Length: 324
Ligand code: PBG
Image 1: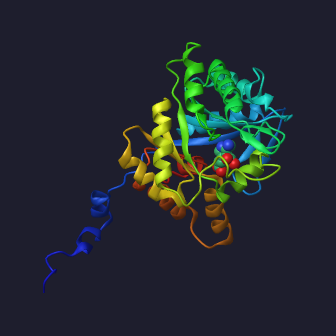
Image 2: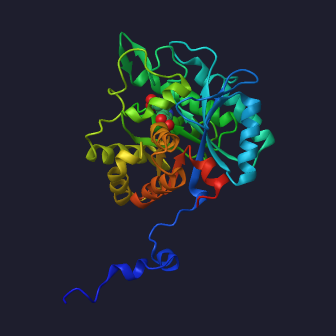
Image 3: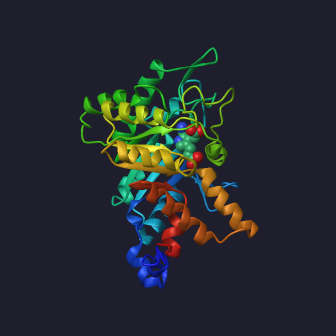
């Protein structure tokens, strides 16, 4: 019979042959673990919608990072949750802001850990938007200076890489310029380049208390209907000086990840966001699926699509359970 020469099942007959023919090999060294650090002392609050993820004050953060480091996790992303918020997000670029303090402590006690910082204003603004606001409008250019100051203060406090997530136009250039003119020309920028306005950020907003107080983020984050526009955003960020570009969220945007991978030759990150994590945790909790298998399939799919690295809240579980 025609076609009988090829029987794809031959390559699936044993776990050994499946290992040999596997096209995607997950390397745990390409995972980044996010953390939420909160101003204050002795705070550890589990985020209800994200089982296993907590908001912690600096001393608990150090403990968590140290435990993770012993398990092999040496790349982290940190988000700050300040005590006070204001119109202009002062806490974001305060020398004694929560992220800046955390950076100094991490670098002092755990110098082997690479720390990436999220550069944005939304956790620090009273209105919850990622830039400055005037009369209900999110202002672009006036926000750039504040974002640049935020990135510089992270660099001065010991960050290894800065990751702007605000989606204002021109922020990568503004950050590159301020870093260069202050002697941080070696500091890499991981740009959230194709960041979509997504319902999958819901749990994060609970975690960071940064839901917008009016309107939504669709005047600056991307429209989920657009993929070609992601190419434009990525190219602009590279021209402005991004060293690594990112697609976010990951699972509903696997096609975007694979387009960007083909389009450009800079490393590509993907953010496996809070809602994607919560879905897996919720399924596992309800008994609708096996957590280990679900998590592995999620992570494999993002690498298979073309990501070179993944930011994922599953990182700790993956290391502690030895899932890869
Ligand atoms: C802040 C920021 C957000 C996320 C990362 N940085 C939230 C948002 O844009 O609303 C989402 C991360 C996640 O959902 O895990 N600008």
